[in-house]
Length: 115
Image (cartoon, rainbow, N blue to C red; front, side, top):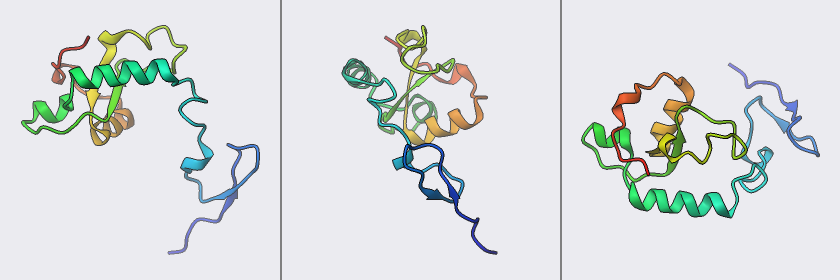
């Protein structure tokens, strides 16, 4: 089976060829998306208090927190619920990606303290 034909990317000022999957260099930086120093400080503090993924910990595995998940989801830093820490959950990247893909996670599984 052959590869997908390359298309022009519409995600950047200078179009690049890609295979249909959005590449990292096409995505704006975290700062450009609104995740600046305030978010970085809040994120670091939250991870210090919640060092392990809530999903993995519920399964008896201690996996370091890599991502903070907003549940219910938010649209970005300008969303009114973005800074509501009661909506933050510590997750490893794998669990965050899985939850984001499905949006069907059992909300009762994460009992990690949220503050």
